[in-house]
Length: 337
Image (cartoon, rainbow, N blue to C red; front, side, top):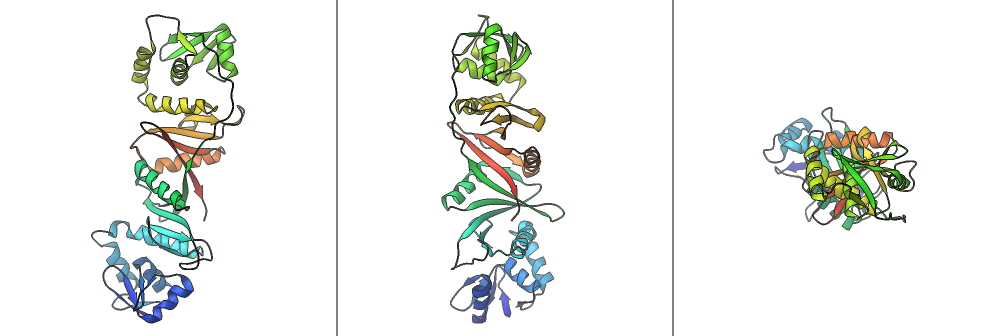
């Protein structure tokens, strides 16, 4: 089949309509079919298209060297080809690509995935990511990141909002005293034993309990805990603890919210994250949660390591994006199409 290249897209005559009807390629017009360059290259490789004045290599090189879109073109083509070879119909937009349900095509099916293409060195901007996931959710589609590494291999991540549901729990009574101990605090006697029933702190022995800064601040804010020394108050303690941990503000916001839902957040240090979170019982943590500031940008390589770790220990991987008045939990999961 013959076609021409106009510098941005490839066009066929009326005979090109068969490509749309049979395989869901391109978009139809009054005089024929308009193909993206990714579609045209794929069809050239399969021997179904001839573009006047171009072979596969020359069309690819012109697209890769385009001053505006060339930097990302090769990755986009690799993703396009991979998804096509998996048996899906794929077209451009509204993100980088939209993918129809297997066996369906434009005009006779619905979109299942919206895909954004990244390289292994790209930063993930969480404000942008949240907007794109919200768009996909509004359209009732799944949002995927397709990450192309330096060896042109592909990894797909399913990204979605996680909305934790509250569970019933027994609130603690007030009146527990604590003694500041550096950036931590210590509780003694009955108060220590009472806090342990709600899985707060780390036992030093049967009468002494060490509380971490998020635990101390949460219990102070709830009116459950007071300091036994009058020389220190909540503001003084927070300022001191913040000097030792510049992520404390975000960690406290997330910790407090998870506790308010009846969950048990504990340190996730050994997993490389802020919290491991127990949601159903205190025998197995179901989630790893990392608190991040509003506007955060994180390398996709860092996220990849996080997702792999969470998967290896059978937990969900959540990034908790702290806004001024809310927390948006973003779940990352590696998938196979």
